Image (cartoon, rainbow, N blue to C red; front, side, top):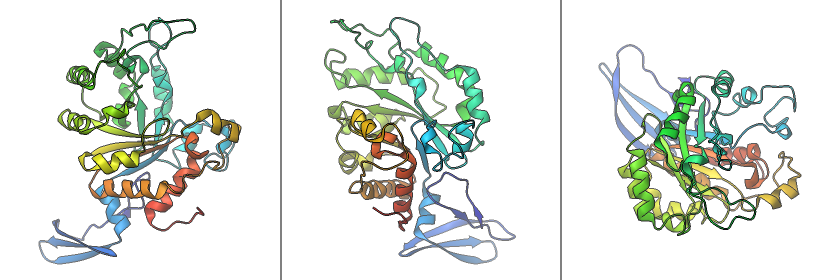
Length: 349
């Protein structure tokens, strides 16, 4: 037996029989163990696997944080608060990270700001080959209109909204990284009727865009119109080989509600982003030091863990991206989720 790569749901073991090759022929799940019958050319082997190991083999789970350069994570993630390669040390503990700084790309009427190839190279040189990035696509692609400036009364259309040429330029910038992109997320703000007349119009624009761009990495949609997250939305994702981002926080309904309603429609891959409700409030509590839990979500996390387990059992890859604003410390929240997923909590709730 040998261990799988770091970053999956839990330690996963793979059994390789000696001598002749064979194939897995029958799977029988019997609590508290899973029995795997392995038929080779010469003999039959029976392998007992604990349920959490079986889940790891069925689906992959990647834990990550929303960005990573937080000196207050010293002792939790980093050896020192300063003078280190933060991403390199981060990658020793986690198998994935969310890059959100490239989202902020649209400033007044200037040309959108896209990633520098030097930055892409720096990030790649800081992590092992099996490390994955989840990336928020530039908001110059996802904003229908410019953010209103002080004194402005009228909305100004964004000429780069769902621009195929701009997106291709973005992909060119991150070309070296593409083999390590776990998912590229398109985050859309709340779209009132001034910005988008209907869900039908929104989906039609998305269909036109995604039919015209390269499809060699997974794409996921984060929609912040609660009324757009319905059966039509998930059917559209399935028909166009796209994925759903579950966003917990702000004014959005609980992801647990959406999971209960539409979880059965999730296929292949999903992203769970855990954010808080009031950024300013939790920043006051922490003083922007992110080394302890200040707003525990202990009544919520067990259900989130069950949701993740269900996806893994259904062979769905899950990226869990945790923001400091969710509880006060992303690393400590991840520790809690890991304990719940393993079924053997070692932390106090």
